[in-house]
Image (cartoon, rainbow, N blue to C red; front, side, top):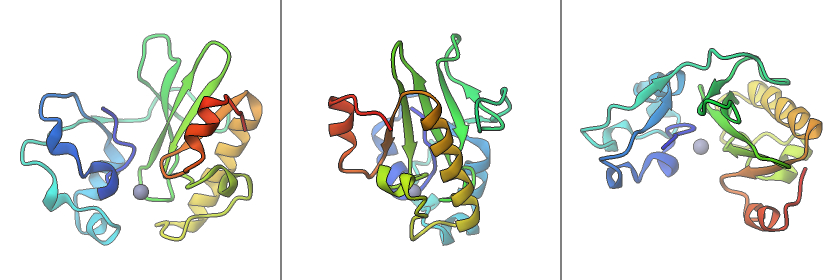
Length: 166
Ligand SMILES: [Zn+2]
């Protein structure tokens, strides 16, 4: 399991998965597990006592507009990219399929429309950084046929079903 960030609506169900590998980007983990995290909608006091995630550093090669990556598979078709702003250390997941690419944006943008219009979300930790992230995501999704899948976009499943690219 990959946690793109530690906001409680993403990390709140961890107690259901005591026997799974849990991967978390180190920067996001460090930020969330402290006062700054608590002030930014993380609830470390609610994490399971057994939680010891594998911490990842995004120190792989640049891909498109992203300066670094972390490959999750040997063939490098599934990888993490840094998408900070919404919260420090936020990452998104990119899956390159045979004919389409899937961008699991998590909360880097709330909807495809927000991404298209470069609208920074209202609870972002760092609006300027969020905007830079939106521009990087937009540029990536324009360079190859990509289905954009933010966590909270109600239209995501329809786009996925209809294979509608950005
Ligand atoms: Zn979030």
